Length: 145
Length: 34
Image (cartoon, rainbow over all chains, first blue to last red; front, side):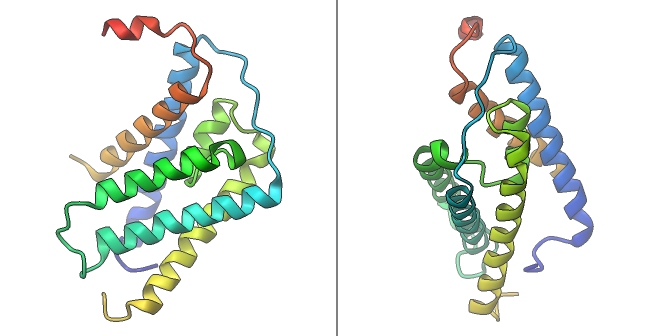
């Protein structure tokens, strides 16, 4: 939506992420000996709000730190993104599962940490969060093409 | 390296980290020997 990634690359990125997440989930289950895992019980409204908020925050952060001309060549983008993920995982892990990314949501669902019935929460909020971040970034930085 | 391979590895390690830290500790002590 910001024009930083060719549309033709998007399916490849999505497939690579989902395959990576599913393989990682299978590896964890195999190494842990297929443990009994209790899926997290979600308050749907709270999960919708928190997942949207951090998906938006992460996407907006990446757009500003990685793709923006104003901060090109910066050396702190990895630290900023990493700490944002850390804050989200620690503060909201028990609230929504702390996926903030559809591929990760698929991974935690395969591991049994989240119920299949809750998958839509992650998909809807994460995609909308990313889209809203792109729209706001575009509106605030019209010259940053 | 191919950009899709990089994305694959990034997500793989992210979900591995989540899985190994969230799921109750199990028979993974052998990893300590690696």
